[in-house]
Image 1 (tube, helix red, strand yellow):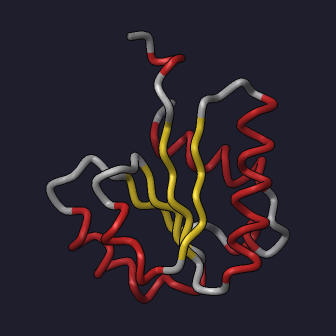
Image 2: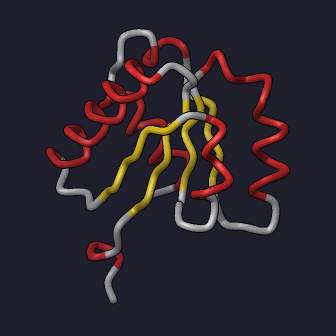
Length: 108
């Protein structure tokens, strides 16, 4: 199966529901414009464990930097890439910049 057919599963967590939903939608739009096959869900940090084995990447809101160590404990032994989003694009809900950051981390 070619990599272009594989879906990249991304979980976005940020604590407050509204902004993460908008951010996920904006990343989805940016991915679609580039014909990238991505599935992006926005959830609360309490739900991370439920998704850890179904995702390729975990985007974490900048204000949740304090839980990144805990998240890395959860993802140890998995291939999940954990990315702390930058306040510069998170505060403006810039899906394009977030997608660029994610793709560079994943080396896609």
